[in-house]
Length: 294
Image (cartoon, rainbow, N blue to C red; front, side, top):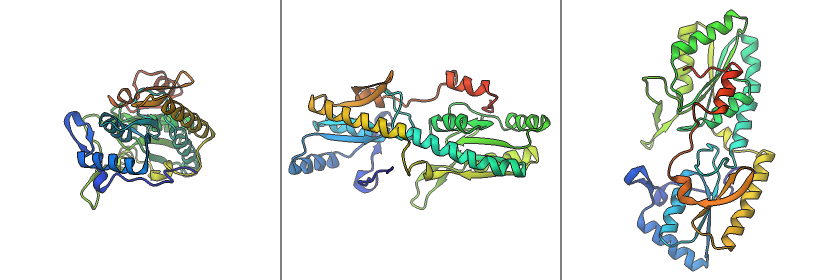
């Protein structure tokens, strides 16, 4: 079973406000209340499972004297100090599966299909999912793109007999000299999302081809985890209990060089782990003919 089955929230008293250095800060009264409740329950160690927000909170709790162990779990795969977070592989599998399904309608109707996936600041899901699912174009936040170059790429494909194209775009992808696409919720908050429709509209206008957008959304975040994630999650859990028993508080479980280790939580949240445009994975995508629109 995938997902946070014990429940979770980042609303109400648990909202982390942005403080100095853009660091999310939990209110002092919430930390003090947590200390009181944990003491009442006899909880000596808190194992926190989550992404950059959860690990930042874990660090703040640790600094307040609450014994914490971190376990990296995020589909975004954007935590520093670990080569992989569990949840990422399952999200990539969902993207690849969606592309497999969209290939059918793209080919039969000679369309350009745009698949919008998660990834506000890091393009790991789009990059890996796009390669695995046979995308022709991958757009990620780390590589600004040009609409004209995308349109030219699709026209050249059509001129060589490739009458359909598959585009994967991370929600945080940004055109060169443009802005990220955000939308406002009923609560007044701004969220990423909508770039897929913008890309589809621009490509249709510039190529004359029928272009459709599909937003994968929360289908990436639930369902049955892949076998890799099941194994990695189990290994992380075992290591978390081990380092808790050994007293390595303020540490996060980490996957490096095929081994599960532990590192200071602070090392995991000092910056986001982003796709490097010069990385071997990006070059692999380019070598198989995938365009990044740059």
